[in-house]
Length: 121
Image (cartoon, helix red, strand yellow):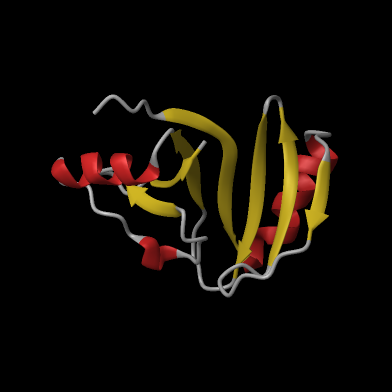
């Protein structure tokens, strides 16, 4: 495959509802980072805050059904179909059931369970 995987600018931290307010306050009030709540319409995320993190954006996602936080990362590729074919040929299946996505994106996981949003750049 000639396609190159590159890190995207987005990092999502899935935060349990019971820890969400304190987590937002940590980034906003203690670290003094720019934090802004954004509207969201997603069946698994009840609230989200955008945090400016250097050249990246951290999305603090409030998830009602999680017991611990998870960090999800973004990968970009020139051609999504070519990349998913390459991944499949190497034993990496998409796991789009994790969370609702537009049709031109996929979720994948590394062997340790880290979730990546794979999308075309």
